[in-house]
Length: 112
Image 1 (spheres, rainbow, N blue to C red):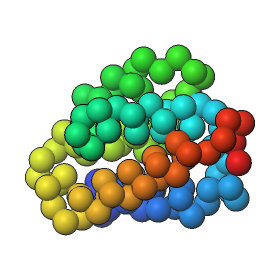
Image 2 (image 1 turned 180 degrees about the vertical axis):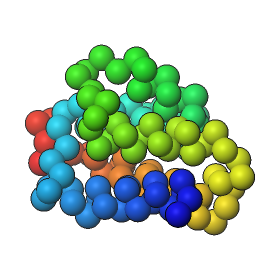
Image 3 (image 1 turned 60 degrees about the vertical axis):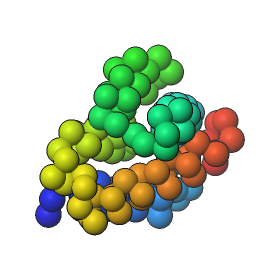
Image 4 (image 1 turned 135 degrees about the horizontal axis):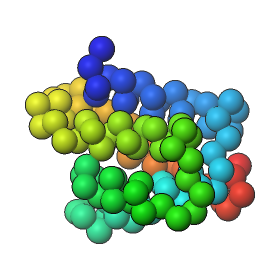
C-alpha cells in the first residue's frame, strides 16, 4: 500500500467513526478549522508547508499522538512527494482529507 492509499484509508475511517469510536475534541476541531481557513486562503490547496507550520505552531493542546494530528502529519509528508500527490489515488486521498477537515471544522465547540 502506498502513502496516498494509507491517507485515504485513515481519513475514511475517521469520517466513518466520527461520533462513535472517534470523538474529536476541541483541539481536533481547532486544527481542522485552522487548516480549512489556511486552505481557503491558499486557493483551495493544502501544502506540506502549510500543514507543517500549523502543526508546529499549534497552541491549543493538540497531542502528537492524536488521530487527527497523525493524519495531518502523514498528509504533509505525502504532499512533499509530487509522484504520489499527482496520481488519481493521491487526488482521491486529498479529497477525502478535505472532506474530513470540512466536517470536523463544522463541529460545535466541545465536540459532538
